[in-house]
Image (tube, rainbow, N blue to C red; front, side):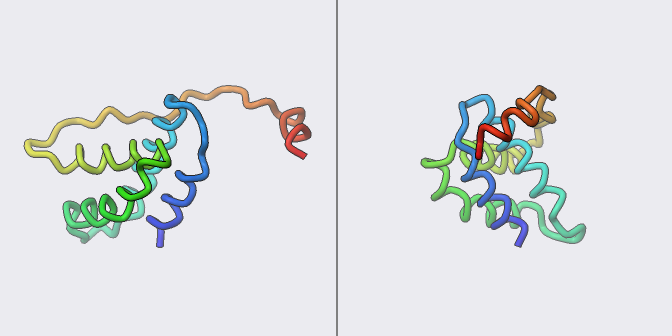
Amino acid sequence: MALDRILHRLQLRHTGHCRATEFGQLGFMEWLGSLPADSDYHHQAMTAYQKALPLSPIAPAVAVFCDLLVASTRMPPQPLDISLPASHRRGGARARRMLH
């Protein structure tokens, strides 16, 4: 299931608050894109929230994901503050060699 895969990846990201926000937003966008076109959004969001909530205290990116799920179901609807992460250098080949 897509949600399980997304939550697993969000738990693996041990980074600072800024990066956790980026990963949580990306996870939300990925989850949103994985929903069937004919699904009940509110039901899907609350199901995902219930599954993700126990993981949120130990994974900041999951907490961001949960916050976005809740915000997306509020009435009246409000625009969500989500964006793609800014591109930046990650170290290239040198950084990959340092990992081994």
